[in-house]
Image (tube, rainbow, N blue to C red; front, side, top):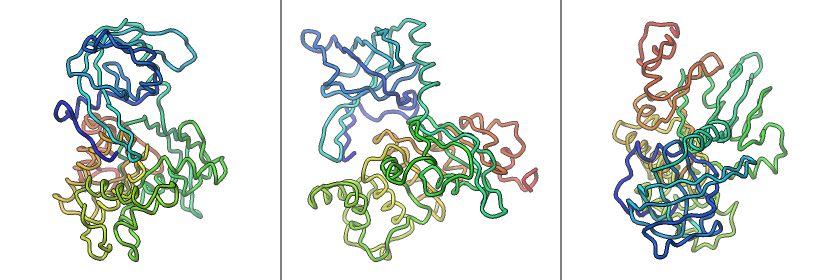
Length: 377
């Protein structure tokens, strides 16, 4: 997204995380605060983006006031034609301008009244249907060295999942599998229901356009300027004019606090600045899924905190699903919805920050506390 204007102040960390992305459809929306109970057509509303047990969030082309009472008719795209009626309170709304200049309002509602069985159906649908990345029994060896030995992990749309583990345990190898740079020896790796290990290179290229990636070293090309580095994906995958690409570069650099560095070369940048340019390049095409490989490695605590805040901001403004590889537990606790630990080629535990902090696993406990005593050593 190029610009964002929060209409009712800063959305709290916990409030925005109650909403998980789901392509549910709203057939009619009527607000008591709109003249003559104005109804928006499904085409005007497009599709809603988020839903959970407590609320729903979707795009629309009209502004509504915070606190408005909104009436909804919802239909789950699960083959069931039953419509669910509900009343909701508008909790927040913000203006979104996409990189192609389209403007809309993202609106978050909290259910005021909804039938109990309907709420349960919605929660069950989220749990069953809304997996964007599905990894089942993934194996990978290099020669005689077994790296991944049966990785199982489900990643929900819109969440930030942090994968932790000892150096050399296969975290980056897992990340490269997810983006399709490496093919597994066996197992399933589905992106939006498509097993990317079993598709053609052309089909894989289309799926890769859903991704943005921040590499561990930022991976900027030293011979190109900052502007030229950020334009690479835009030049390869879009037909935008030079003027439009320049606007996107300026706006993305503005988001990471580096507007004005367009003509500098990577050699002119500090480590933290390189990471932020890498982030600007990674989000240049508004990706659905962001991959971060050790985003805070080599940075001092102040610079690391600024990168963490940017990751959270991208989750908030771009509605991305984020996968972060790190062994920095300060960063993991700050940005994660869930944390998964990779050990001996498998995910041995995945859970919320609190669940990981309170773990009974001696391996996980030793890693997160940094103790020299325990099963790892």
